[in-house]
Image (cartoon, rainbow, N blue to C red; front, side, top):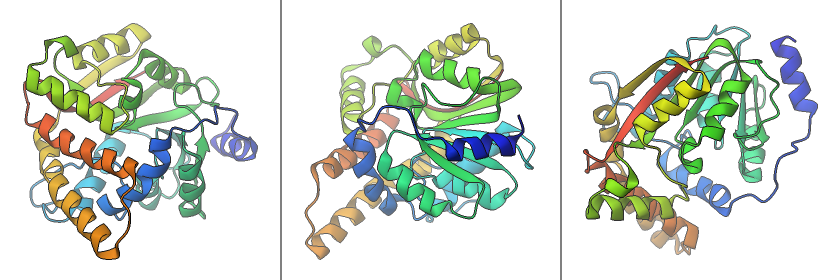
Length: 293
């Protein structure tokens, strides 16, 4: 089946996944607009003299580019899956740069599906309301797949990794950009453990996977040529924007006399503890993982 046929079929298909959308996904989107004008719901990648330390979206979009570089797909008529696409910020970046690419994203949030697809009109992009652990893609139909800070919501589960493996064509790649534990949860010191628990509560995360155990899972599933890159120092400059963004968000709300929703407080708290967790470099790291089917 051709890429265009797959895209057309999915556009006609109604989502058959669960409808009980986690409140976090719906309400977090408005908060992330303040984080990124391009709706990049993730941290950035700093390269001296290429990205701007004071312009957050230059770093956030560079993370998008780093992921697309590692996918190594043909930029014409290839089909790529965004597993946990949010409102489609990374998809829009990819389609602006590679307009002949086809990208289909999945999210649990009906709000993100509706608003994201508005922004993807006149492009080769589509967002479906589906769970990335159980998508409607057929076996061996996707030329590449990526997950940017989304698999953490399922604890970097084997189920999510297996689903990515199932939908990928042979020799195609999965790229994951995310934070991971460097040791088991039980081995964390008191401070690291507190930051970790608060991070998970604030951002509704099931947990972060242990980087070595995730590599073992990928191998057991059948992935090969697994490359794990610690990019913590590249990501750190964008993480340092967290207190600035939080302060600006609160000032804006106070000026407009708007009520700050309970979920917004949780998001802000999660962001703060993401920064604090990053200071515990023996326990946490930010990695780019590339794995080939």
